[in-house]
Image (cartoon, rainbow, N blue to C red; front, side, top):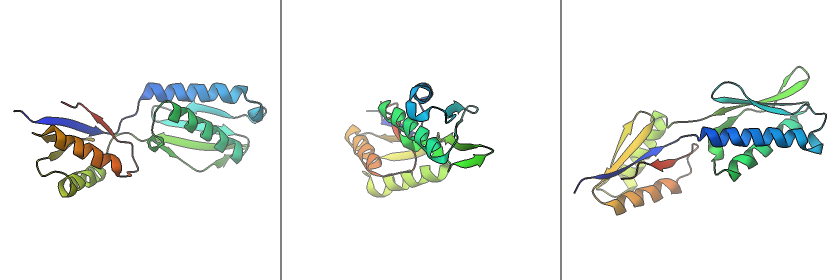
Amino acid sequence: MADSSFDIVSKIDRQEVDNALSQTAREVSQRFDFKGTGATIEWKGEEAIEISASADDRANAVLSVFQDKLIKRQQSLKILDSSEPRQSGQQSKISITLKEGISSENAKKITKLIRDEGPKSVKAQIQGDELRVSSKNRDDLQAVQRLVKEQDYDFAVQFVNYR
């Protein structure tokens, strides 16, 4: 019997993030507590989002609304890397970068975890910014998925290409 395998990845669903961002922008433009604060949220390039408002607490409130919209769309908040509010003229700005892919040191951590605590028949290999896990036994692969889900990494983890 051939090996079964799956990939551990950290991907962003760009469409869902874009939908959450446009919902947040719409809500900010309509809510009474944001009137007159100049609060906005918008894309800055492919991997960055910028929030601006007249005060730090208003910028943080926009960030909170955006995080709520992401959660409702089943997106992990671990994909966000947001800065503290900073003053830029009259505006208070928050920069958010989107984190995608598993870095090599994080991939090594996961590989070590699988090797040390996972079933012995499982092999893990790093392939760029993702990890391929394979075994002859599908139950062992499911045990590895449970093991990885239990860990609290600072990046989002998804399992794809299960075959």
